Amino acid sequence: MPRMLDVSDAVRAEIGDEEANRLLAGENAPGSYDCTSCRTPGDSDQERTSTVLFVGDETAVLAFAHATCLPSQVVQVTEEQLQGAVRSIGGVGGDLAGSGPHKAASEQAVLGVTSGLVLIEGELHPALVVEPTTPIVRPGTSGTGDDFLPLLIEQGFMPVTELTSVPPVLHGWSVLLAVGQLHAVLQPSATGGQPVAWWQAHQPLQVTDSWRAAANKHQQVLMYAAPVGSIGRQPREDLLRSSLDKAAAEDKLVAAALPLAGT
Image (cartoon, rainbow, N blue to C red):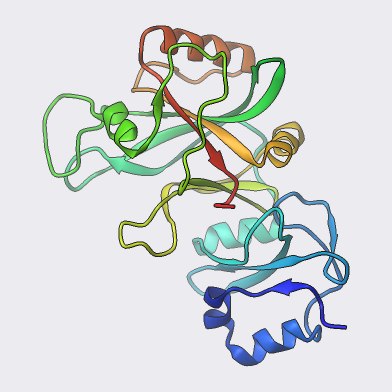
């Protein structure tokens, strides 16, 4: 009986028709696997399963995920990220730096990204808090202003004055959580193709079990963004929440709910 595998056109193009057909025939795919997203067991004989191809600079790794967790897709990563994903190791929690919006016409600003759980209406939600290390100006311009929040609002993020409700879902954007690690925040491609990385971790972040469980429960992550100097590096979630509340009260916070991996 053929396995219940989904092989997207993008994955097929990378691995070739012959290998894709072998997978669909059940020749090269394991029946049971650990989902590359939620890390819980799956069975391609019993439930729909996505093939996820991680492509590095020199090598590629084919992984499997519950179709309800991730769609079949090709994920471009650096060779270093690919090796880290294979080993499934990394620091727990904390801050990351990645590439994001433009600081100036030819420079990339550094974004600090912190993961944490946020309590809203009596329920814990997984959250990412994004704060640049420097003021962000509009691409192609120069100056001393900070356009970080206006740029995000133009993309569909909503201003937040208090953290009392879950922000609206921003379709087209997503959070890539794979191999139990946080890899990137994806945004729609300007050309209408595959989503592109708005922020990508230099090293995949091994999020906590409770954060990953909440993400899989809600199938989305709340992203909050604030200008430089608004949040700071907070070592505890209660301090992070206090900083978020303060930024919201000062009209320095925008937010959106981002689906997991574009699903």
